[in-house]
Amino acid sequence: MDEQAFNKEVGARVRAAREEAELTQSALARLAGLTRGSITNIESGTQSTSLFRLAKIAAAVRVQSAELIPDLSQTPTASDLPVHLADAVAAVTQAAQQVMEANHGKG
Image (cartoon, rainbow, N blue to C red; front, side, top):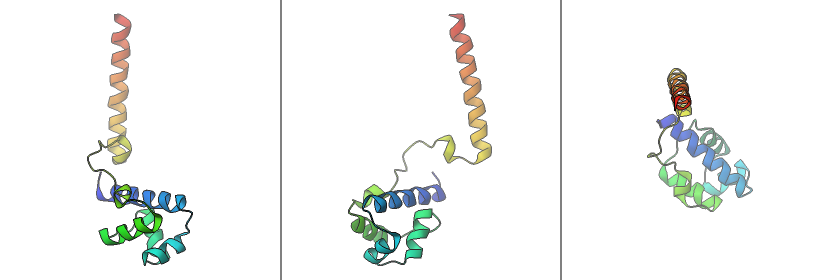
């Protein structure tokens, strides 16, 4: 997972936690000491945030800070890759599946 994908995932987790807490972006911004624009940008993944601010956001939506941070040890999926590499992975996967099906039919 690259930094851009990481920020997008943090943003998605912040948005989900905010919605679960039934807060507007403005309300979350007030509780976390940020602007609504910052919350919008964090949720969209276009703005990274400091650990301190992320902890303030977590406290405001009543979750543990770790719940807002993606696990970097997760195996990347094809959707995490640039389009040209994702297409190559899909082609290899499809070819492997065809070989397996052909071999399975011979047994």
